[in-house]
Image: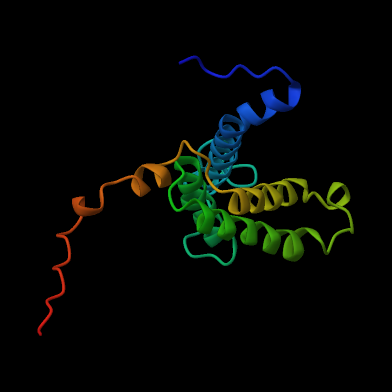
Length: 157
């Protein structure tokens, strides 16, 4: 049996959709996790010009924790929709509490990254992880692999 070869641009785009969604999820998750790593551990340039955020500091340290954990979950495609929704919400919060007070537009207030991450994660939360994700592997696990099958109900006559 031969594979279907796309003959129109629309068919090619549809055929590429699963790979593009997966690549988008991985890149966005990786970039977000890098922000968390920088802020929590001082790597990759550190937090705002170097160093780390003090443990437990509100809201920066907690945002960095969401960035690291949420970014890794989205990157792997594990618990993707809830993780992406949390990441999206954290970036909306960051935009409106940190950036919006300086100017109306993201280009004027330095909030472009917050807006892009917010909408990117919202897109992932709505579209899902795509076919190449841990969520899919977990969903395909045989039902009896994790627990004993339930006993059949007995009938008494």
